[in-house]
Image 1: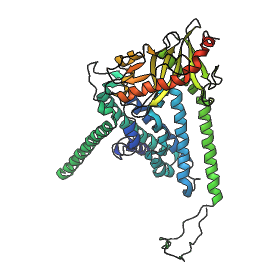
Image 2: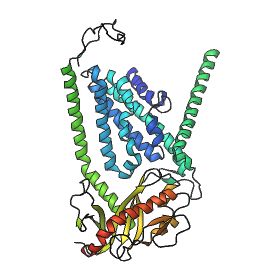
Image 3: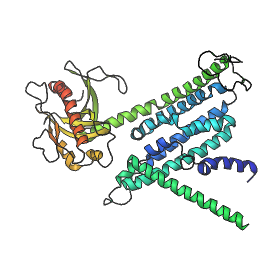
Image 4: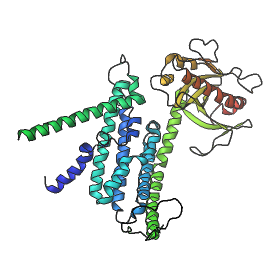
Amino acid sequence: MNPATTKTWDEFMEGVWRQNPVFVMVLGMCPTLAVTVSAVNALSMGLATLFVLVCSCGLVSMMRKIVPKEVRIAIYIVIIATFVTVVDYAIQAISLALYDALGAFIQLIVVNCIILGRAEAHAAKNPPLPAMVNATGMGIGFVIGLFALGAVREILGAGSLFGVSLFGPDFQPWVIMVLPPGGFFVLGGWLLLFSWIERRKQRRLTEATQNA
Amino acid sequence: MTKPANPPVVVSGCHPAPAGSASPPPQVTPTTAMIRTMGLVSAICGLIIVGAYQSTYDAVAANKRIATERAVFKVIPAAKSIVEYLALPAGGIEPRVGAGDTPIAPGAVKFFAAYDERGQLAGIAAEGAAKGYADTVRIMFGYSPSCQCVVGIGVVAMRETPGIGDKIITDKDFLANFKALDAKLSADLATLANEVKTVKHGTKANPWQIDAIAGATITSRAVGKAINDSAQALLPRLVPNLDKLASKS
């Protein structure tokens, strides 16, 4: 891979893995805990956020030279709110049942700190293409995070995945997993797993340097 | 707002002077530039929103109509088409003109006349709402003019606890309450002869009572109250006018 591709790939993977918004930065916990009661809800919420993130970062980046710094936050919020409204209409057009299930959390994407954070920290300083690549990485990271929670919670709490029953009619669902406390349990479990992987990697690294 | 290049340091009273005045004053953007940029951004965003609204309007309206039809067909299985009506506060009914988000006259109650494939009245469906455990439970119920009873319910929207409150859509014993729930009017047609009421699990004695689900009493009660409130408002206006609805116009 030539250096330019490597850099783009790096920008992309930053959000997906190293700086994963859910598991590493622990951002956007409000939708993460609230809508991940099923895999479908989690996936659609993640995709809605991904769309808003990529579009608003693209537009913010295009306008970065003409936006006065005194009013930048106001302008970012207007841009983000616009794309949230677009997503809101799109979901209503696709499925009303999904719209009802996600409820106020679609509108609340406006105040998702991942999006404003990306606009301020990355898109405002970079040309459109890298900004959108970075935003896509972050967005996919968020989708993965939400899906990891939603899938586990649906399997344990309803005995199904994407609405397809997995264990047959005799399965007694672990209802607390689809209630708010279950969100915290599953998130805690995933954070534990990720920090364990991180620790192990660090230890291997130190051992490798000591041996060398 | 333009900041003065050098903020006055003379301070009267107890307010301390603002710190950081030692650093050189930051470059200041003229107000007009800010307004221009914000105006431009707002215009672009406005266009995007209008475009999204316009392009999804038909699909959203169709979705809402399909959702309503499905809810009605569920409570009146014989139905093949529906017509939306309003029951006016003065007595009388009229077909509702303009669907979707158009506001309805104050005090008017919305209901659906459902017709079978031959265009004969199959039943009446109406919505009811009452406070449940977590939030308002909105239900749709079917009313059969021939037996003067509620013949089925469906949930339009609820946020009840999964596995507990949401049993109202799965519990067979509970749903059996709505096979022929008595909703007869009193002799003067002003109110229901017997209030529809949810009673404690296992104590149902009369055809106008609903046997609650054990462990989900509050949600069960909400269903009963929603049916009762809606029927009390709707049926006295509807029943004298039933002949107008007999076949699809």
